[in-house]
Length: 407
Image (cartoon, rainbow, N blue to C red; front, side, top):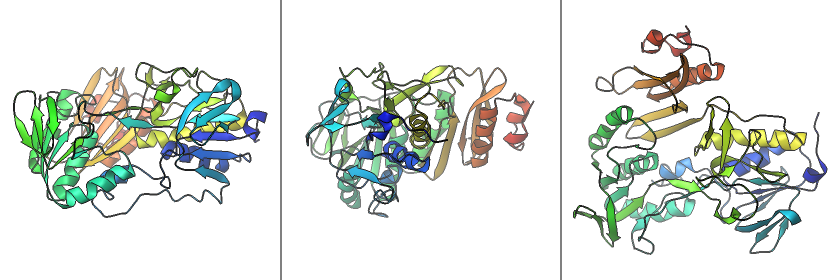
């Protein structure tokens, strides 16, 4: 039975027109919500998907990646180029440059914003890769095939380096940590991935801090100078929540909106979803902040269900999932390996291009990373969801399907 509270009937306003915001609006309609829905987007562009930016859009294989959503047909009011600057919860109003926007129920879906390299503001040739405009600015630069320096050897750095090599650029990747993916994976798992850079013809420099960027070159702290026709900064992202300071919405030390298990914030009638929000995971016994596409796809369904119910009705406790395409490889990850007590390899990275790593806690699979083995992730994700004990010997045998690895 569909229930709609008086607050919801007076209108749901969603701040943020990325994946999480768009999917929240769509989920509300799919689940039977009939009240007003307004989607506020800071960018002037039709809402679009971000993963293609570092691939097809950047390389000129696609002009954009707009969502195939009929907003008008769904009765969703789309206000583009509308940046929200404040929230007055007592008045149930948002502040924007165009004037106040009243709401009955509010959903925060502002996503994340890229971290910048200190001292590079206004330096010619320095780029970020987060928005459609970023990709549009970088595309003609790559077409000239300059020498490019990528700052950061995380997921986005590797994806950009892949695209730059495909465009014919000479690429140098600089990472302050002593290895690639230092904040995401254990050293022994990330180690074989470092060899992919050289294999693709990209130079990788780890343990090197950037001291400064000047037009045409990058200065390293150890005195080295790298020629750079283009510099791309990919050193991570932080929840785009600065505008919420002092509004009564609780923010964590990571800058994320602190949501509960139902994706409600500390303010009544205000929800948060996607990259801007952390949530408590009963499955993993910790609070998770997941900056990946699948989280922005799944969370909105929970938010919509709880808005329609008018009360806590659906808990959000997913098995996190993401993928990355880099250097001719398809990398997938499901779960959360923090707190695992056992790590098992499926295949040898030194012996082939396809392999997986599984993490167990108390004999139960909690995470899997796969390189070129999509079935391991699909089957492993189901094992994680069921939390059934597994046989370590079977998990370690790449010839045994993970779905058959039960204890």
